[in-house]
Length: 57
Image 1 (spheres, rainbow, N blue to C red):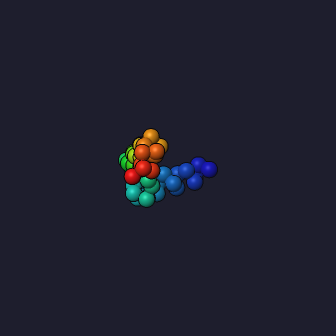
Image 2 (cartoon, one colour; image 1 turned 180 degrees about the vertical axis):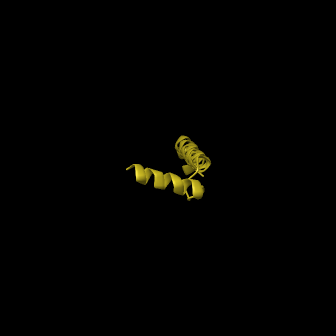
Image 3 (cartoon, rainbow, N blue to C red; image 1 turned 90 degrees about the horizontal axis):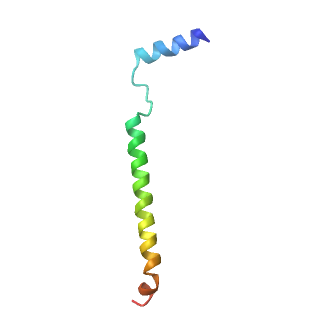
């Protein structure tokens, strides 16, 4: 087990960018999904509130 950990550590030191997802990418994705949910929720609320009035157009 120690040899495996050491090999992984040596690889990480020799190749710092191994394709791992950075914390910045995760933050951006969470913000984008949250924004999309908020926009969709707002649209749904507006449609629900004015549904009867929209039918009379």
